[in-house]
Length: 199
Image (spheres, rainbow, N blue to C red):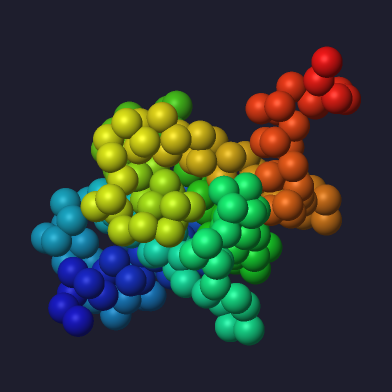
């Protein structure tokens, strides 16, 4: 790897170990083995590098969710929609439960968005692509098979659920729902049975 890649890897490590706001340029240099001047040369600033690190980490995390964990089972290709919904959420929930440093960094960044226009713009640029990726994961298809309307309507729905679950995992990790719970909730809401049987 060159200095550019080394810096990005170092920044991603710092993101997990120290958090977004507490990471300094010197921390990144120590974690990457690069020199201080190379941050400005390759990324323009420490903040620009950290923005790239949060985006790259998020993309890698999302890609990793789609992979079957060791000892786990793949989501059956012929699964019913709610069964697939539950099984895929279980994959996400396993990652959320075991990667608390990553989740903490994600939630920290959410809190910074209202006061950091450059960070908000950087996240905003990749948000639609992230929604498209989530639709692809839940449907078990390549990103190229997700049409624009599905990405626009369903992508933000998955993003909202994922963000909420990340926050909840930090607040009440011992009372997280399961994929089956989420599927049951969706079924009850859409059937008009939240408080009991529909009439």
